[in-house]
Length: 488
Image 1 (cartoon, one colour):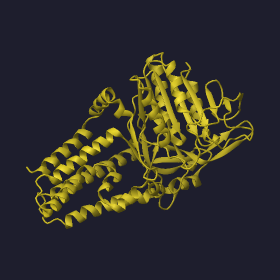
Image 2 (cartoon, one colour):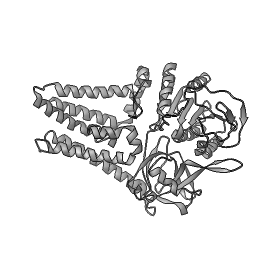
Image 3 (cartoon, helix red, strand yellow):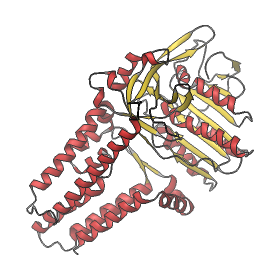
Image 4 (cartoon, one colour):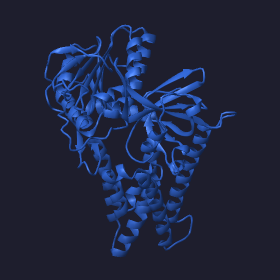
C-alpha cells in the first residue's frame, strides 16, 4: 500500500474508535483530567464574528490531522503533477469522516463560499439557508471531484473513497429518517401535537405577558424517558407556509404526564423566522383546541455525569437556564432516591431582563417544593430592564428563603470561591453560558488549581448580547435586602 492508503486506513480507524464506544471517551477524559489539567481547562477563543472557540486539546487533535496531511502530501512526491494528484486524492479521502458529521463539518472542505456561510454573523441570521446551502455545496463538491477524476473505476482511488463517502452519507440519512418515523408515528397516534403557550410575569396586582419567549408543550405520540442534556429538532408544519421544511433544535426543559399522556416543554426565545412565526399561534391555554401537528427528531445530546459530586454549581445566562433545569430535576430525584445526605446544589442565573425570570417560575417553585431538605439554592442576577422604577443597580431582593435576586452582573469568581469554602465532597462547575461568561469561569477554575474541582459544559451555548454592557466582572453591591412580590 502507498502512503495515502495507509492514511485512509488510519483515518478510518480513528473514526471507528470515536463512534464505537462511550467508554473510550470516559477513559480519555479521566486521563486528561489526571495528567493534563492545563490542557483540560485552557481554551482558545476567536473573533466573535467567526463565532466559535475551542479547547487546546481540540486544537492539538486538529494539528495532528494537519500534520498527517502534510506528511502524505510530501512523502514520495517528485514533481508538480504528482503533487496535484496526491492533493486531490487526500481531499477525497478526507470526505469520508466528514460524511459522518453535521453539514457544518462537511462544508469545511468546500471553500470560500462555505467559509463565508460558516461565519456566525451569517449563520445566526440565515439559519435555514445556511443549513440547506451546506448540503447543496457538499453534493456539488462530490460531483465536481467525480467529473474531474481521470479514472471512473469504482474500485480504484479516488472513486472508491468518494463512493465510501456517499454510502456513509446515505446510511446516516436513512438512519435519521427511520428514527424520525419511529419517534413520530404510532398506531392511532399519527403525529405529536404541539401547543404554544404564552408566558406571563405574575404579581398580585396583574399578569403581564412576556414578549420575547413562549413555552411549547409537545404531546408525544411515542413517549421516551427524558434525561438531562437532551435536545430535539422541532418542526411544526402549520406555523407558516415554509415551516414544513424548517427544523430547529431546542433543549427539553422539563417534562410531565397527565390524563392526556406524556409531554415535554421547550422554552423558545423569539428571534426571527420560525421562532417569530410561533408567536402568532401563542395562547394562554394548553388544550386540544389549540394543538398543531409537530414532528420531533431526536432526542439527541449527551448527559453530563453530575450525580457523583457533593457540591454542584450550575451557571446559566439567558436561555441557558433551559439546559440546566433538567439537571436540577434529576439531581433532586437521585438525592431523595439514594438516601444520600451530603449534597449542595447552587444555581446562578444571569438575566438580561427581570421579566425573563417568568420563563421558569412555575418549574422553579415546583423544584423548591420537592427539595424538602433544602439542598437547592438559587441566585438570579438581573442586568437591566427592571420592573420597578425604584430599583437601582446593586439592590438585592429576597424572594422567599432560598431565592435571591441581585440587580447587577454576576461576579463568578466571588461565587465560586465562596461556595468551595464550605463545600461537601468533590465539586463540579457546570456551564450553559455565553462565550464571555464561559471563558471567564474557565480561567477562574484553572487558577484555583484544585484537582477536586471539575469543569463541564453543556453542548448548547446561549447567544451573547454583543455590544451591551453586561458587567460580567463587576462586584455585586450589597444593598439593603428587601422583600419583593413577584416572580422567582
